[in-house]
Length: 551
Image 1 (spheres, rainbow, N blue to C red):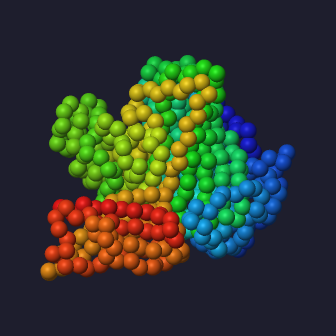
Image 2 (image 1 turned 90 degrees about the vertical axis):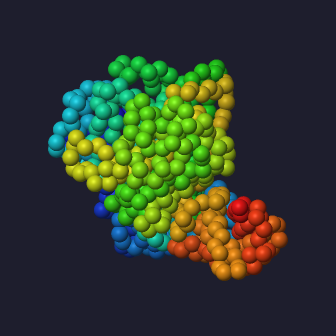
Image 3 (image 1 turned 120 degrees about the vertical axis):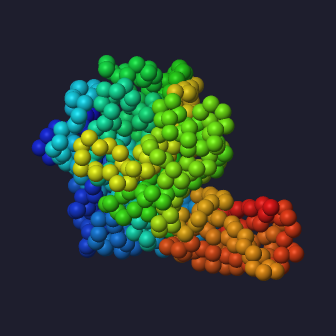
């Protein structure tokens, strides 16, 4: 049975009681419609939470469409202001204060889907073929918006960041399923013995394979709110006991681990911060659990029509992967084998080489602090940067290259044109972690669009840089191309060769185009083994530094 959240976001079903959804953006949203949105309505009990009717618990006015930007559903917003009702977030750009502002508003999201048949514990009890007549379920959502990003949160269904739209390019970074269909019903693969793809960024815990809470409500709370930063928390405690009918391998049971997802959008920034906090609320240890952040990606998509093209690359800084060849034999011909089911990571970095669906894990673990997905057609990527080494697991799942032509209106066809990149506290599924009594783990991820970069040499929360060297007769051109998450702000770009400055210039960060710096030097001044370095600074603060060894 679908369990109601403690907050007041509402679910509305189109004629049938259902427990699952597939989304298309609602045509009428509080954010992105022409003209001003209505004033916010005060919440109840003094609690700073989004209520029904688009309210804030602080009772201040809240208008949508900051900076007059265009939302994913069309119309121009009014460029309104949010009341400074909380402590807000601190400016993270070396003291630069932005004229941009952040707003919070209420909206809704409608999901077209084929019917779901489950018992009171949400375990599948229907037929193994979905009914052929879809229906629609609508959720209330929360929108955070500044002049550069429009972010949609869906706490009621798995605690999701549902959408991240890069406003200056009008491109979506995440995938939303246009029509949801249940699949693999009764095959003992997923916790509730079925799954429906919805999309976005969400947790899988305390089990793998989407876990126990992908279809459950999260509590919503506004932690801090000002014109300069808004932080919204989606939280959920693992308080559901092991249900009858769950496949036997899901044996963790109830852990009482509290998951808190703090989503922060700052003024003057084109990145979204997600802080994840896991707390063992027990006075005894949790001997086994898993936690994965699932990112369902489609960078460069048109909002409301999300999909990846065949010309898509997986950006992951690793040498080899463990691919589940026993389940998908085609992996044996896709890459050079290292040993067993471990393969080199080369061909599979390109989506066109995934001849079928399948799963691979970074092997033996993932050590880089960035990863992403790149759309070659419009040179847009979505990057995840995590400075904290709390997630050594990287799982890759694609539905195979044939998914780009799938008929989503066919209820028996569940392939979808997206790639999932999972980030876990353990290296692979079924490798259980543990938490000591009262233990707390926290890490921060930043998500942003990379524009015009053909690759990544280095990344930080402030952006990504790609360094290249090209020959020009007797000279060599040293190049640095960067996407920075402080659009419209002044930075200093410095190029160094073996530690010596060869170029230094001031630039204003572009929001829709990459920032490019280059210098030409005589080839004789570039010995073999030289190191090219690019650094981007605000004042004395280094935002991003990249190095390339020149062989």
